Image (cartoon, rainbow, N blue to C red; front, side, top):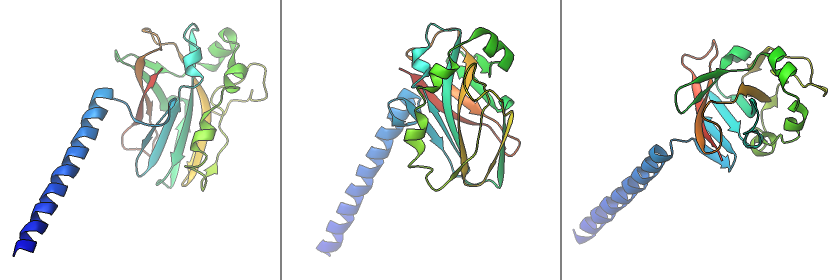
Length: 202
């Protein structure tokens, strides 16, 4: 009988301990309002169907520019196909302002650092081990000005178990970058609702 009571007490303590851990993690997430990090610059939102990753490694260097780069990776984990277009992306700042991708002509006419930004490509080093069993699909939503990636690919089809990596460009948010929180939304005809990743530029 005593053994039974001891066992019940131990189990009750374990339940209380686990609940405390879960509560503390949830509170921390609510305070930060950010998604899980893969390193100090890279954030991921991962579900059963889609993984959406955003890296601010290049973004943080463009506080003084009118346009900002944001490196992204998208993996199709559970859909037969995922159709991504330029219109699929929307950046939202803390004030609720929406920023679609910069039109390609506007970017080419007014911004000359695409090649330099791509030299800071970072995300492939982080997601390689996560998506190592996946097939990478070519993507180029934004053209280089002087480099080899001048042909824009406006539409990318991601079959199941494939992923893309790309550098996207948005107009610089009105309130600036450093220390600000953002959400990158992804929509697609195959998704019932948008997927979004919450991140900060530090």
